[in-house]
Length: 389
Image 1 (cartoon, rainbow, N blue to C red):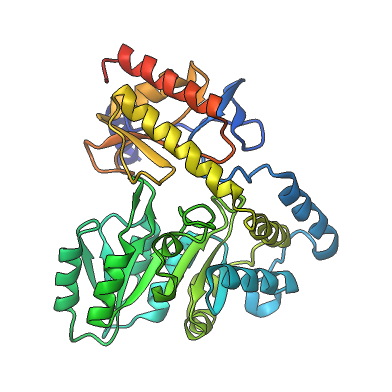
Image 2: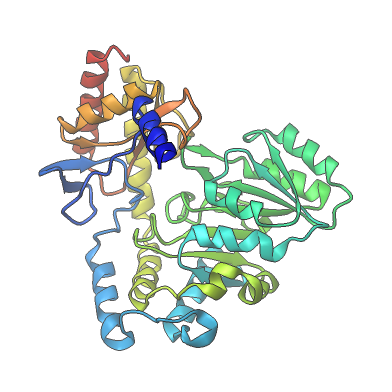
């Protein structure tokens, strides 16, 4: 235990100790935390669906007809008609052949690579991919390579190095959650076609709001037919509860149902989550949510840039990291912003590399222009007081 105590003290001294703020209200743009109302600018609630009444009612009603939980994995007695309906809905949304549900996208990533790839294959992954992708790749026996973040020359080098492998899978996040980057999918598609490789994209921070109708980065770039496998989550823009999935070729999904360990050994998602998710996909038929989020993203990015902040990420991405570098400074600014009733969190090592601390702001379609201006004003006052701009 002495070693554990020492590590905790080191984390505290480095200014990277993470404290959990307690929320006593539904997740929304305005929440109650630390005994007062604050504006929330750090949730994955990109479309404002977490407290949507249609979604809540769909979840409530299905408990009367399908119960609370399944108490089983899918292949024993954990598959209801509502699970199959949701899988069909997701397949149609992404324009893929079939879909498999998981309890989270972390589980979807943990269960995919080991099931699909063997020692004669290769997996080539962007160095900044999500931790769940990294962990999932570690479980497989394939040759593992990493390419520099969004560096197509380095990706091509890895493809050349693995020319003798049976199958090669290029792996990337669609949107990188810590940096607000959008991966250059058309260039990846060109390389995959040139070297006969498959493409996997994790769309957790893109599904529902990136692309004209929210179908993610493949739609944004017009390369939907070129993407072999998509993993994503129900736990962010799509209501924010829980659940994840893999969607793609029917043969891939069939194999995952037979071999994917998190699927075979974890409970089915609850009927209420499945029903709520189906309602979410119905709401996505209205493109106004995507447009409002785009306008809010533009307003915040332009306002913060004009104020003198170092704004990271792609211009169309509602993940807007504000770079400060120093971990203590980012944490102090986030704490100070709570006094202005602005709820954000400082991100530092090990969530991001050392010396690259930032405050990750996340916009929602449900934010009002007035709320966004309040956040910009508060950031500016606090940063000036800290001599950070």
